[in-house]
Image (cartoon, rainbow, N blue to C red):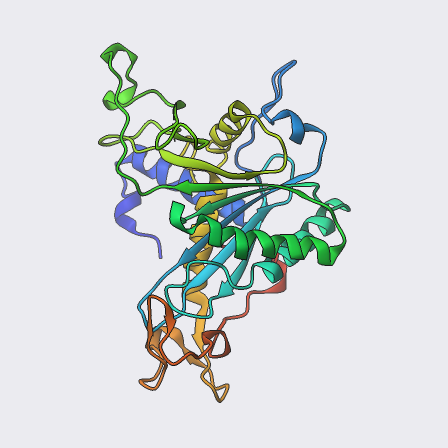
Length: 329
């Protein structure tokens, strides 16, 4: 339902902004393109290795609920050169508070097949951007998710070069300009500011402030290069991530982190709304009503009874026509 207070007569500015935001979402859901980055003469916004090679940008995130409910993972992937059209695959995790995607192979295979259906060829490069992973979980993420993607490629008989980045939105690092004349709006550092070697000179990491920040101190996203089989330079990666921040379909300004991460977060939240409890007998009940008291209790390490929650939960069906649309935005 439309909140009449938001479009009240006499407030033309808010009325126009509300209608603009609504139209952006509708257009994206219908398969339209809200924003794009046009190449200037003699200059392309894409890094050199991606300009003449089919590539896919993937985003991964996991949504957690209470310890008695399974986590929901989402894997999104682009299937156009402009990185504006995405499809999503939702995954019920085997246990609650399970951060690593259990069915990464199946989700990746389906997205690769969708890419092939749209482009008549498979990607040769995959840029994987992972949200919600700390440095202590990087090795395990490579063993589970990177290997799952590798197995999906092998199953389809394709050879793909992969670049893996982790993106951290929740951290305590803030950037300030020494000279106030170098500040942007609201006293924040200027849009596009990058600081390298945040945690260690040995790590290929940086903080990117891609947005202006309407209120308070702008908090940039921290990027860490975990694996690079593509051979991108640090400047190419930083520039690519920065330009991506202008392509988020729900906002007509640059946002604080890359859209694949945003879309994966939104898709996981939508998956939480679509989740249904079926139980061991296969009976279907609304997830909102909650599972019965006999449902296995889980903790941070997984199911307390050792039961695989994927056998007890499933998603409500999404219409086949929405298979390749951004229904989650």
